[in-house]
Structures are given as structure tokens and as C-alpha cells.
Amino acid sequence: MSNTANWAYTAKATLWRVYGENEYGKKIFHPPELIYCDYGFDSALKLGDIGSGFVIKNTFWTEYSQANQGDFILVGESLEVDPIKAGADEIKHIIRYADTFERIADDYALITGV
Image (cartoon, rainbow, N blue to C red; front, side):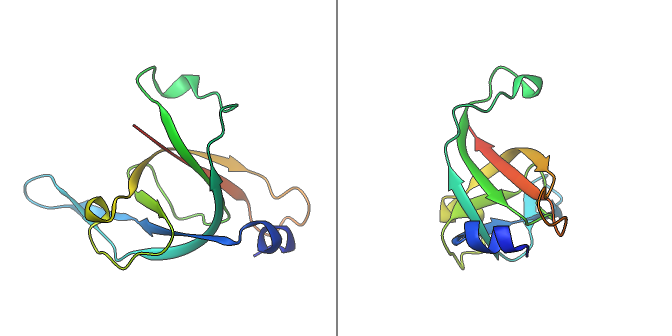
């Protein structure tokens, strides 16, 4: 973790990455993972390329690079294996930012929505 991220990403979030689908098309998830991040609502984000029916709910800023669209994320820690039961939100869009200062690890905005 870069020095800047170590200073900035002090909140915790739980992430459920999609493993695949079962025979009925329902998503199967890896066990929940704890990531360090910061989070909030960023009304300045412009995401015109992902559709007009998308409403941003939360943005998670992190150096965690393994998240994908379709994964689920929740503010705080959870051991619940089902992200829906845990109240997590689906990641709808991801933005990658360069690590401007140290060039150790890029930063990501994981954007959830409804």
C-alpha cells in the first residue's frame, strides 16, 4: 500500500467477488474479503457511457485492484456469505486512477448504484 493510501484509506468495506453462476444462472460468490478504502457519494461524477437508467448510490475509493463489475460491496465488516442478505450493493462501474505520487499501486473508484 502506498503511503498516501495508507493515510487516506482507513475505512473498511466487505467485498464479495463473483466466482461464477450455478445451473440456474444465480451468482456464486467467493468468501467475503475485507478491503481498506474511503467511501462516500460523489455528485460530481459523470458516467454518461454506462446508461441513463443508472443512479449512483456510493463510491468506494481504494487500491484494491481485484474488484469487477457485478461484484458486491458493503461499508464495514461482514462475515455473511450472501452479499444480498448482508445488504451489500452491486458494483456497477469502476474507474482506474494512476498513483500520481509514488507509482506503487493505482487507485480505483468502485461505484455502486440502483
